[in-house]
Amino acid sequence: MLAGCTSFASKTETMAGNISRAMLNQDDPEIVRTGAPAYLLLLDGMIEGAPNDRALLIAGARLYSAYAIGLVKNTTRRERLSTKARDYARRALCSTQPAICKNEKRPFREFAPHIDEIGQADLKALYTYGTSWVGWIQAHSSDWGALADLPKVEYIMQRVVTLEQEHDRGRAQLYLGVMHTQLPPAMGGKPEIGRVYFEQAIKYSNGRDLMVKVEFARRYARLVFDQRLHDRLLKEVLKAKPTEPELTLSNILAQQQAKELLTDDYF
Image (tube, rainbow, N blue to C red; front, top):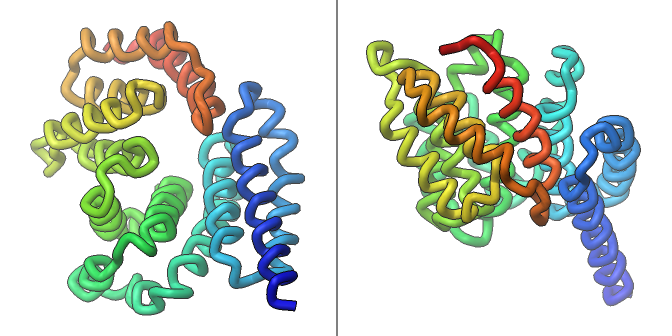
């Protein structure tokens, strides 16, 4: 009986992984935009049947967040979908680290020590928790209370980098780069630290994560009015081949955004 349960769990986790890869490897965003709800409903059903399955919860959080932030324009829908992503991520992490969820609304000084306790066994769940929280903040950007959580998310991403610098091919550094380039230096921003993180993210993805260069141009180059860097990064994105395992969809979206950024009149 136990062997049968283990086999079923393995099959559901494999299916969840295949669904995730199918979406992330898709080169037509419109197919994902129109077809993703069916995948998400399927994952919801799988999680309903195995509500404590960490692999399923992580897959659900990852896909709901990617869909909400990358493909949904309606503000209300983005807020709702990003909230679901964050809920799945919280459940995945807090099944083994309940103190984190218990203290996530507490002041930073009370929350941070629990992040310091996270080890390799919970790295993937911690990273998903952090990225889903970032997506939730982005979807609720008009809420100052949501923005006030940024220091906690930054601390999470720093912990991820401490545990494994190259995790998810440098995506943690991408998030850190964006966080440090939200404001100009005169208002407390740290764009040069952000630049270092962007450059690390390019290094760890071997330049294959095109969204890193788009955000590098959008967040840093525009902030410091470096048009030469801005245009070089975006032209590199447009010249690159977008196909890359688990980055293809993101790369296609990055190329679409690069075209828009190059043709506006910012500079």
